[in-house]
Image 1 (cartoon, rainbow, N blue to C red):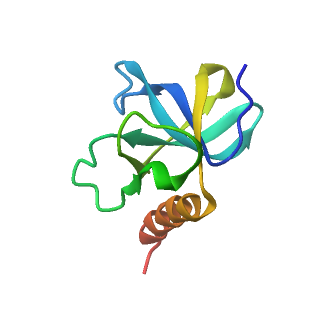
Image 2 (image 1 turned 90 degrees about the vertical axis):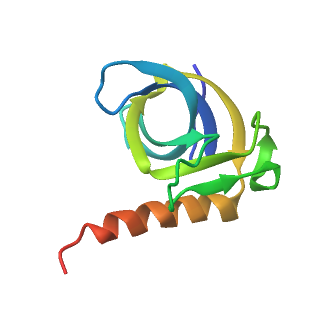
Image 3 (image 1 turned 135 degrees about the horizontal axis):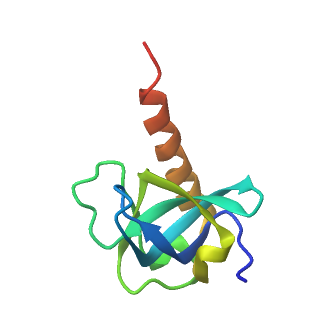
Length: 114
């Protein structure tokens, strides 16, 4: 089992939004949800015109590597049990991790009634 912590980049079985299937892919670990569950956000090599996407380059990492420049998508969140994580591949630096968290919070705040 992989020991998880916030700011880790992991490879996990990532569900499609309509739950028809899943595929292995990278995700950023945001926080523990308790009982072995973790809140994750999708990482992709294609920003898909997502204005909230946070660019991940080698300079954004404290340890490990990504195969290419990638983008954390803080509006693509999911919860997964730690048993679904295949491995940890990198650790995001504090500044970039704070940027991902802030983008997630900003998105959720937009949902508040005016």
